[in-house]
Amino acid sequence: MLKVENLKAKIVGEEKLILKGVDLEIDEGEAHVIMGPNGSGKSTLANVIMGNPKYEVVEGDILFLGESILNLRTDERAQRGIMMTFQNPYEIEGVKFDQLLFTAYRKLHGEDKTFFQLHNELKSIISEVDLPVEFLERFVNFGFSGGERKKGEIVQARFLKPKLLILDEIDSGLDVDALRLVANQINEIKRAGTSLLIITHYSRILNFLDVDKVHVYIDGRVALSGDRNLAYEVEANGYSIVR
Ligand code: ADP
Ligand code: MG
Ligand code: MG
Image (tube, rainbow, N blue to C red; front, side):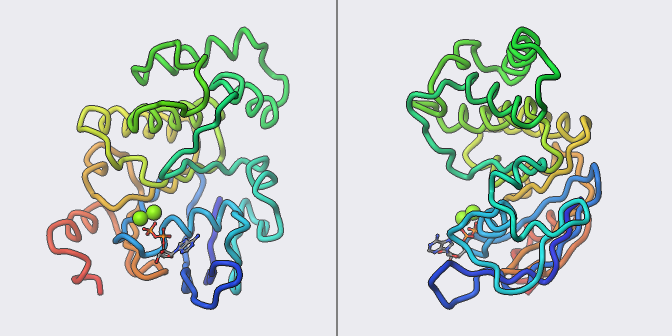
């Protein structure tokens, strides 16, 4: 599904590499966790996979479904089925949550469902994440609390059904009940067939997640890979054991 090969990248116009040779391979339907300290380049990796023009790839490749996507724009990558949620989701004044989602759905999946069907589907997802139905009528992320934004990102992912979903610190700032709910939703997304790259710096979400692999990420590369026990070991002993 996704293959990242010796990926090196930096901010456009700067010299210093942030990604220093990332290798990562995610198969269809798998959920991988990337865990790493603050400032190690996790969000940069997510942004580079998504094609954020602020960053420049200087070496290596990103293959999605067997083809390099390095020359594709962000919207073209999204159209192929890659989606990312943000560590700090943007506010979009003037655009209602349901409008945004209906438009995005039609762009990705065409007219396979009527607006009536889409609306019903969205309402049922909204209630599963414990958000009020009025949420659909509000401007995207406008005045949403931190927890509501994170749940809103989950609603988008469940509704839009990307092939690959990258979650950047979806667990940060959530209380334990919201964390459990969000983790269960991520498991649901996985069951529906989406591959996942879950970026975090805490192991606690792993207690609730169905995860295939854990990668410890330090200073711009994957330093060590294993199962969930690797994350617990890092949590108990710090990143120094990996270094
Ligand atoms: P993480 O998500 O692991 O905390 P980031 O990818 O956000 O790490 O950042 C990695 C490093 O790159 C940090 O030193 C950060 O300051 C720097 N960096 C990332 N993006 C930018 C940017 N757009 N402008 C300036 N510095 C950046
Ligand atoms: Mg950070
Ligand atoms: Mg980050």
